[in-house]
Length: 78
Image (tube, rainbow, N blue to C red):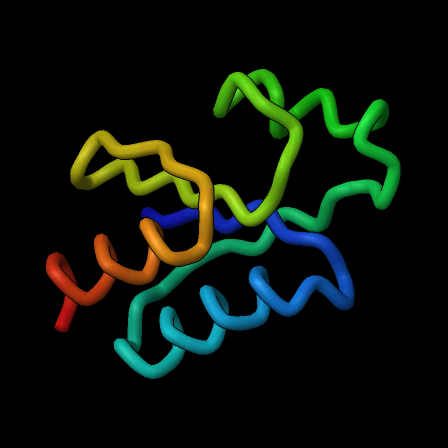
């Protein structure tokens, strides 16, 4: 199961969501608050409050930064 923590209107989050769909990866979106200070769930899973964050339970990976996430998705799911 892949979980994507994302923010509405975030272009980096949209890039990751688009790639997940292109690769036909089933994922769950968790929409986070626009205020960094209210992103407690993101901080709990990733240690930071920025988005996007992907949690991939199959590979035991939690990562942030869209470029890194895209590289990971291409390597594991393409």
